[in-house]
Every structure is written in structure tokens, then in C-alpha cells.
Amino acid sequence: MDHVDVIIAGAGAIGLACGYKFSQRKSVLVLDQHGQIGTETSSRNSEVIHAGLYYPTNSLKARLCVEGKHQLYEFCERFHVPHRAIGKLLVAVTDDEHTQLERIDRQAQHNGVQDLEPLSAAAVRHREPALVAVQGLFSPSTGIIDSHTYLHTLLGLIEQQGGMFVGHAKVVAVEEGAQGLEVTIKNADESETRLSCDNFINAAGLGAQALAQKTTGKKPPAHTPSLIPPLHLCRGHYFAFNGKSPFSHLIYPMPEAGGLGVHGTLDLAGQLKFGPDVQYIDRVEYAMPEHRKETFVRAIRRYWPTIDDTRLQPSYSGIRPKLHGPTEPQSDFVIQGPKEHGIQGLVHLFGIESPGLTSSLAIADHVMGILE
Image (cartoon, rainbow, N blue to C red):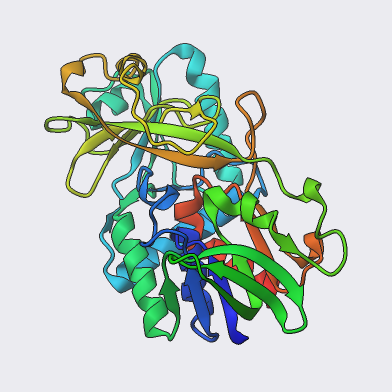
């Protein structure tokens, strides 16, 4: 049986970031059931570099987002990945939202984000004349990134460092064996390949729970189903604005249940888009229901009342691997190592939704700390 130091299932931002870090001193194989890298969650998001404002104190999301933000900006500068720290305006559109805005400001400071700037209604209008708000917060360290270039840069570095990516390779079993971890892979032609490794990283995103069910150890608690959190598929839709954007920053309303509200983002070409919203679904399907537009228009008009809704067109959707249901509290990232499941050399990553892209390099460091 051929042996590799590290095998990673999932070639999204998290799997590739882990591959980049580990391949600096180990042999690495990154696998994905699809033919290309980043075809699911990592390529269907807002491409925002988050500052770390909202997440609970001492949570993995808070710590890894703030750490990851700094690493990501440095990585983009070093390897010439297109990005821009254009800043974000978080706006309260009614007096009732003052308290929520102040709470976000306090939470951001607890998380180590010290650069927020409170704005009066007049200051908001000065920065963004099209907005209607009674108060705002400006986050200068929030930015945007070309996520596709980021993913391909990570892959290029993995290959330069001696690692390898193989597509159309689905991991169907991971077993604790005599040679470490034994991994069974189903290939595109339905044949199977078996490899052994010292470390296996389950970064399969939407498929992480299903893959965890296929891992077996020599003794409990590896077989305990309660260790695997439930997966809730949550689809978010994006609508593009056809025309010149009136905004020069990212525009965020107050967060809502399950998400950050229908916010306005810009890509590096200046294209304005809105989303994502929150729709829990039963299966992986990237549909764009036409009726969602009405909900978007109502949400956007709260802070941009003069929007011409005829210019709002369906763009794309993405699915987030949430660990909480629609009526449950927001969940944290869940990263399980041998201390939790009892299998040496194995790490499972569950619920890596936003701010996963921002946190990706810091998550990779966290995984290395568990395994080394």
C-alpha cells in the first residue's frame, strides 16, 4: 500500500490552505470528488475578507477570523492575489437598531477588532449619499478578494512544494490500521485505490458529516454518532445590480437569524451584488427561485430606498454547511481531533461556513497544532 504523510479530503479553501501549510515539510495529497478545486462553498460566496465583528468571545470563529484576516492580507500581498481593503459600512436604519449596533461594536472590541469608527447619520450620508441610516459603524479592515485566484495560488504552491491534487477522487472509507490510517478512494472509472497516511484531514465541507460516518477506529469513541454534529443545508441567493454601483464600500444591515442580512458587496471589477439570504433546504440544489427577488427588494429598500428593482437580476446561489437549524442559536466551527474521537492522526472539520474563507490559513494552523 502506497504511503503519503498527509491526505486531505476536500479541495476548497480549507483543504487547500491545509495542503499549503503541510506541504512545506510533508508529502501531501489533496483529493476532491469533483474534477476541479473549489467547486462548492468556496466558489459560491461573497468573496469578503471579514474583520471578525460578530462572533462570540473566545469562539473559534472569532479567534480564527481575526488571525486569518491578517494572514490572508499578508498572503495576498506576498503572492499577488487580487484583493482590496475597501471597508464596510454597518448601518442602523431605525432608532430601534441603535442597541444592536452598539452591541456589535462592543463584541468586535472583545474579539480584538479595535479599528471600528462610529458614524452619525450625517457621516453615513457623507460616505455613501445613497444610504438611509440613523447611525453606522465603519470597518476599514473588511475587504474583498478574488477567491478563485486565491484557491489556484494555494494549489500552485502545494504543487511547487511537492504536493499533489487529484480530482474525481472520492474518499469512501478511512480506517485505523497497522500502517496508520488506511484510506479507500473511489476513482472516476469506479475503480478503488487504497493508500495509507499518518494524517488524514476531513475538509469535505458539505460532505464532511457523511465522510465522518465512514471513518472507523480500533476502539470507541470513534463510532459514537453523537460526535458528528447534524448538517443543515442553508442556501443563500445572490442578485446582481445591472448598472454602476452607487456605493464605494460594502453595505451591511443589522444581522438576521441565520445570517448577516441581505448586504451589498462589490467585486474587484466594481460589480454590485446583494446577498446572501437564508433558505434552509433538504438537498444540494443551486436553484434561483424567481420569487426571492421580492424579498431582496424589500430588504435592500430599507437602507437604499431609491433602488431601481428592474436592474436587479438573479446571479448565483451557494450552500452553507450550517450546524444549527433555523430556530437554533448560531453555532461555532467544530474541529475534532484525536482527543475527541480517539483516532490518531485524524481531524474532522464541521460547519466551516462564513467566515471560513477569511479564516482558512488560521484554520490550517489550528489543524497543524492538533496533529503535530
